[in-house]
Image (cartoon, rainbow, N blue to C red; front, side):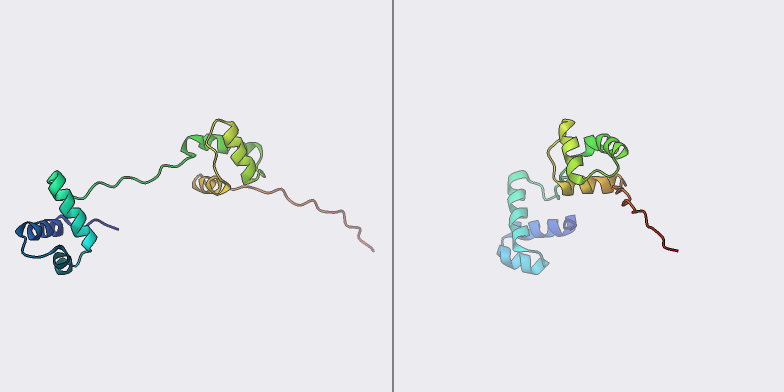
Length: 127
């Protein structure tokens, strides 16, 4: 979701400073949520700014420093299970992660687990 424009923020602040309307009325007038008006007003009073905060960036990947370990393990044992890969990363001083995290990291690295071909039984052909 994108932040509200600076123009709408300034108009809400001007309406709040004028003091002629309540916060719910201002929210309805500008078609924004009441919580937005409350938070914007609190921020204006404490910091003097109505600008949107910068994006925090989200959570960082747990295995970004261990991609070489995963690549090495896949090259050594291409049919390793996700559980085995998780244990390998943990033994290499990496974080304890779930199988789902290992799977997502393999997808990011475009690494696919290759399973062994099934052993084919010798078929006796009757002639």
